[in-house]
Length: 201
Image (cartoon, rainbow, N blue to C red):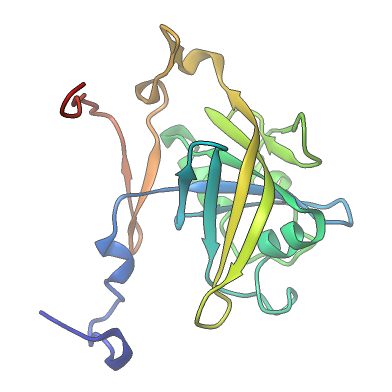
């Protein structure tokens, strides 16, 4: 099969977001200028640089109460900070419960029964029991072609690592089994890990 996206795919569901898979999930915590917390998962997410450490996520839809974007991007515009929480398999249901297009006054921490903790260097909450959380200062918000498509780039200013995920001085993902998005309603969990050395190492 071949199709040109501008002409349509003719399938019952768009295959594009199932092709690039699995994708890590950035569970983005923000706080608006009004002090309200927000928590939402984004599967267009990744690390993009080591020095300084930087991450990005993309928001690709809008809510009628947020002027062309969603709560996460709107809050980051107001405050300039956000926290990325790593999603483990054990949190799949509460993560999913936080993914709805709720009105801006809904606090997803409360709505989904997710324990929160204060960040250390930014004014935002984080998921208290997340395997890792990255406190970020926004560096760029880039508008992409298309309606409501934004990339948010942040510099990591603080890193939380859950103690039980540390083994012999390494952050061990097998201790918590990261959750990933595969498109449609499909997800994957990382359980099998192997090592490869680069040529010359």
